[in-house]
Structure formats: structure tokens, C-alpha cells
Length: 388
Ligand SMILES: [Mn+2]
Image (cartoon, rainbow, N blue to C red; front, side):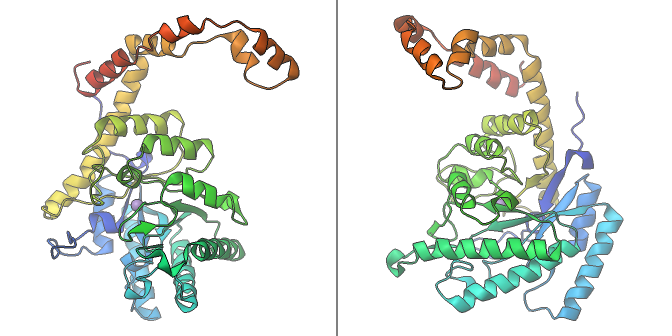
């Protein structure tokens, strides 16, 4: 039996807001007391966690004075030092305060857009002071319920201006951030701008310094939209844009559940872990999820341990998949090779086009051939169910 105890080298990370979630929902009050950031960091360290991420206001309340801020940061740094946990990602809370009720960077009000940018610059200072290499933008309030304001084109342009501004600021200050945009289709807004991974990839290409920007895709977010998260991550990897990842789980068609990783879609979780491991994804494995509202603090740590344990179990299953002779034989047969035709269709030359056009294909025979995917999928399930 493999050892499923997490180690820092597994690079698991959690947001302060994840294990710190107090179990509030739109219909009910908190079911848990807030936990101190220092306590969270020490506890995560004990569990073998590599890093922690934070919004500015997870550590420093929005109304704190500079002196209070410095005291809190000092205490937090001490906890990081004691626990060996590092800050792996920082981000700005541009969604909780009423000022952001109609958006931050995309707000129709120039004063609010400027305030959002100011808040972000201070938050980037904080993240840099704590050593965060990655800065995430989740535009939770960047969206609309009412499009009669005719703000969409302006909103995208303002979003771009903000991203260009923060990229210059990061370079000017020598912070060296890599920025990761986190798409989400809806919630809290009726419709959020840049709703899915593909939309964010398209947007990044329009920025002044696209090389500084990548993606922070989240399992639950693409799943809420009814999309295939593994495909979205593969496209981000292909584009060299997987800068960060938010692991959790979600039932399609529900509110944003932020379930424990692997709690719901085991096969997709397995294929995701296999994709990350096979492609040697060098980044952290960040859990953006929270314990169910039914849980007390003990349940919170069970949730955190469960996320990491499931990842490690699925990683081991991926190794077994690669070593399974029958599975590999089916895969080999599925991926039919033909060196001549393969080479011919790889790159256009006039000669290749002519040869291709002159070739006679056994269209009927090719159409009759089965792919073997029923057997492959069944064996995959049996492997996951533990009978293989
Ligand atoms: Mn997230």
C-alpha cells in the first residue's frame, strides 16, 4: 500500500479562505468561528502542506490602519517561518465590499475603477512582501445582471487597461509576478466577463505583455458551465498558460459548491491528475474549496486531508494505469500509427498535397473499425474502483 501522507514536496497549497471558511451561505448564518491566519498556517504545516494563498483582506481587514497592517503581517511572517509554509499566491478581494457591487476594474464608475486599482497595488505590495510568485485575478464581480447599461465593450477595455497597469507596476517594482486569470461563468454576478478558459486565453492575447499572463482554471467553474475541465486545462497547458490551478469538485447545474477535491467526479479528477502529472506541470496543486456547512473545525481538517489524500491516491492510480498491460495494449491499438500518411499530413508542401490527393483510402473499412473505448473505459473504472 502506497503512502498517502502529504509532504511539502507534493506542493499542495490551500487558501486562507478555504479552511478558514465559516460556513455561511445566502440563506444561513455562519456555522463555524473564524480561525486566525497564524493558526491556519501552523495547522497546514502540521498536515504537510507546502504553501498558502491569500486575499489581502484574509490577513488585513479592509478598515485596518497601516500600523495595524504591519503588526498583522509581522505576526503572520513569524507563523510562516515557524511552520515552513510559504505564500505561493496572492490576490485581491475585489468582491466583498459594497463598493464593488457593480464590478471593480470593469465598473462603469471611473472612481470605483481607480479605487479597485489602488487596492490591487497595495495588495500586490503585500503579496510581494510575503514572497508570493503568482498573482491571481478572479473577477467575481466583473459582470452584469443588466446589459441595458451597454457596458460590455467598455468593461473589456477597462479590464485590459487594469491588467496592463498591474503588469507595468509589477515590473517597475521588481516584483516579478506571474499573473493568472481565473474564469468563472456566473455567481455572484448573473453573467461574469471572461466566463471560461477559452475566453480568458483570447483576452490575454490582447494585452501589452501577454507573456506575464496565464490561467488559473478552477474545476468547479468550468463544470458549472457544463464544460469539460480536463479539456480546458489541456488547452491551457498547450498554450503554455497553466500558471496556477484551483482544485475542488462540483455537480453540474448547481450553485458554486466548492466541494472537497474528488468528492463528486472521480473519473474526471483522475484524468485531471493524470494530465497534470504526465505533462510535468511544475506549479502548485492549489485547493480552492471548503468544508461543508454541516461541519465543525474537526470536519474542516478532515476536508483538507481528504483533498490531498484523494490527489495522492489518484496519482498512484495514474501510475497503475500506465503499467497495466491490457490498458496499454488497448491504447496502442486505439492510436493507430501510419508513418507514411502521418508524415504526409503533418506539414503542407505542394508535393505532400499532391501525394495525399492521389492516395486511395479504404473509407468503408476505416469506418467499420471499432475504437475499443468501451473496454478501455470499463478497465479504467475497474482500476478506480479498486478491483484491478
Ligand atoms: Mn478559485
